[in-house]
Length: 199
Image (cartoon, rainbow, N blue to C red; front, top):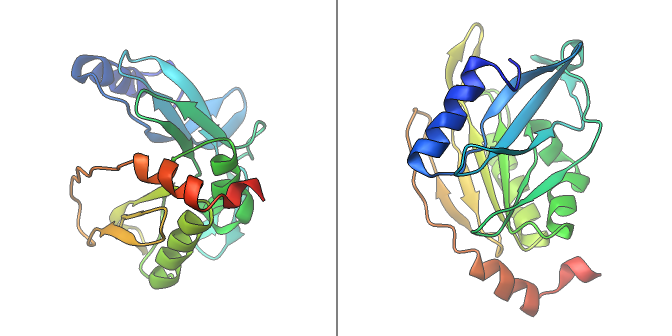
């Protein structure tokens, strides 16, 4: 889809109508290139920016280099009335430059849209996010899709990890809507007590 297409226009209108921020993950077309991208849309329906996946996987079930282009502008952090929010897309969370890079730009919450399947080491993936949240003294919210698509079954198990590395919430394997409080003041206090990002 394109930034001016009907799907994104509908999301922008919904943000404006409901006075919310949203970060939808989309298969974005820009010219001849295609991206795994997440938008940051504010409560006025304005697109603050577009984050694109930086590292493109090429592995069993995930032949993403066949259809995605790597980001040309790296990891992004967005200022909001709530705090600074970074976006790290799917495979990028496996590598150290994503979550920490956003935290070094001031992100207090890092959103991670992903597509984990039931055949993957889901417990390891949860620990991976928890450890990086601790190391970067940030909240990390990983949102995973659910249900079957062809031969794959997406696992769900979306989660929120705190700046202390503790699991604040973990969803099940069914589709659900979650509303969680994310107390970003914990990040600010943790960074005073444990200034690891300055090292």
